[in-house]
Length: 323
Image (cartoon, rainbow, N blue to C red; front, side, top):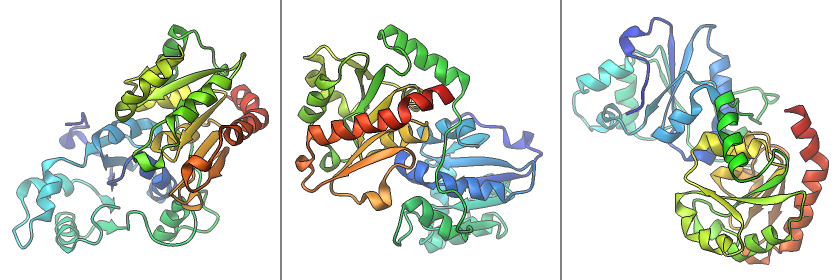
C-alpha cells in the first residue's frame, strides 16, 4: 500500500487521474496529464493511481502530490457486474472532486460503477488511443487539447535524486558528463538489440567517455556479458536514481523501452534503437536520434555510434551546462 495523505485530512479539492500502463506509457501520457491538471482551478491537488512503483515515482516529479496503487481492492470492486457498489469503493472514490480515467474506459461495469461512486464526476479516455502520429499527441487529441499544446515532457527531479545519483557515480569512479548510459533491455525481447552489439558499442567508447551499463530486474541475465569486459554495471536502481543518472550523462543508448523514455524525460540526449515498433508513434520525445530497421539485427554498431557521437556533439555539453 502506498503512503498517501489520509482522506480525512484533505480539505482542498482533489483530482484523481487513473492510468494503467507501464513506464513508457505513463511518460507518453504525461503531457495529457499535465493538460488535465492545468485546467483545474488553483489549489486543486492532483493524485495519480497507477502501478505502485510508478505512482510513487510520479509524486512531485510529474506534478502529483500523492499516489495510489491501481491494484488496491476498491478498484477491483468497480468491476462487479450487476452488483451493488461496494461501500469501500464508494467511500474512497467519492472523496475526489474530479476523476479522469484512462483505465477500463470500454468496460461498462467499471465506468458505470465509478460514475455512480463519484456522482457523475468521472470522465473516461482511451488507453493508447488509435490514430496517426505520436502517442503523446493522440492522448492530447483525445482530451480535446488545442493543437499547440506541448506534447513533450520534462521530469522535475528532487535534489535528493541527484544526490543519490552522485553517490552512485562517485562509487563507480564516474563524473557527470563523463559517461554514456547504456540500457540494453526492454519490456519485450523482440525489441532488444543483440546484447553483443551493446557490448561492442561499449568497447568502442574511449576516454573521456566511459560506458555505464544499467540493468533492470529483467536484464540481470545480461550482466555477465558486460562483467567479462570489466565494464561498470549498475542494477537494482529505483526509477528516480536511473532518471538522475541519465540526467547527468553525456548521452544514453537504449532500445524502444520505458527507460529510454525515462532518460529522455530527464533531459538526456541519446539514441533509441527501434525494430518491430513504429518510432513515429512510440519514439522518446526530446533530443533523441532514432535508428529503425527490421529485422532489428540489421542495425549496425557503426550506425548507432555515429548517431551517438552526433547527439553528444550537438547536445551533450550544452545540456550539462544548462543543468
